[in-house]
Image 1: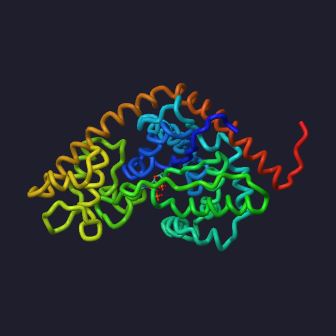
Image 2 (image 1 turned 180 degrees about the horizontal axis):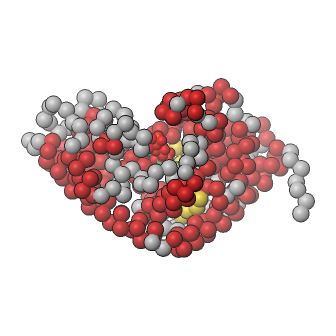
Image 3 (image 1 turned 135 degrees about the vertical axis):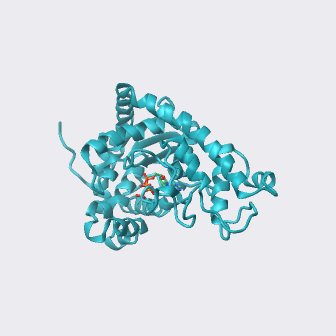
Length: 338
Ligand code: AQP
């Protein structure tokens, strides 16, 4: 077991698009950055998850570096957290198999993300990997004995599955795994599409106009914010049920400027939606401009980037190998003699 006595955080992000989007950042990455101060934090680029849908090999490799560069640009510090690539730590796939054998078929079938994603990709083209992806995620978390898992709201069900499987294993074989808790920030756990504020912002959105990619040209970002869908009313008020678009903009603005939504409501009293959009566009541009520059700096130095990831994988493996060894022993696998 590692000597760090702090609680453990673990999370991962897929290298499935060149750029992270604002939902990824506000829902998850911002929390990664905060938790590296208080937790022994492990963050990974989950390339094993990425191949649950078809990937071009060269793009996947490039996107993996892109993802790592963006995590560093967002504020992850390799001195304060462990940053690595999932496929560099083979224990993920190994514990994933064990967890597959512990999960009921019906239980796995109830995962709503599989239903959504297989519908998007075409049910006949959905792979078994896409179906079992939440179970690999269980292994990802349990390998590190994580106490907290910073994610967006869409991952809550997978964390519930993780808790169930950890308890099942512990009940059957004796205490082995820490039962983790989701770390979901209520306000930003679900950031909505700017064109359809009733659905989550997502890279597979039906129109790119609703999606803020952090690496887009800031001018494009400003334009998207200014053309966000609101409503026919004129009052700037936080009311997600009746004013989903405006409420989403207020949430984004409040989080990026460290202001409360109530204070924003006061400061926009008597003002039109256009004023909020113009200000938010400016805030977004101020946020993405240095983010893009920092990402580029890491990408321009792939040797340093790769060496950060290599050190991260070494640290991660030390923890993961110990958990896997304990698991194998509990299950009754005959130890290999070296
Ligand atoms: N809209 C969102 N609001 C809050 N959090 C979000 N996350 C994703 N979208 C939002 C969180 O970002 C983290 C990384 O997500 P991922 O690697 O699983 O990426 P994803 O789910 O593939 O992202 P998309 O855009 O949602 O992909 P598609 O379109 O394929 O479904 C996670 O913690 C996630 O909760």
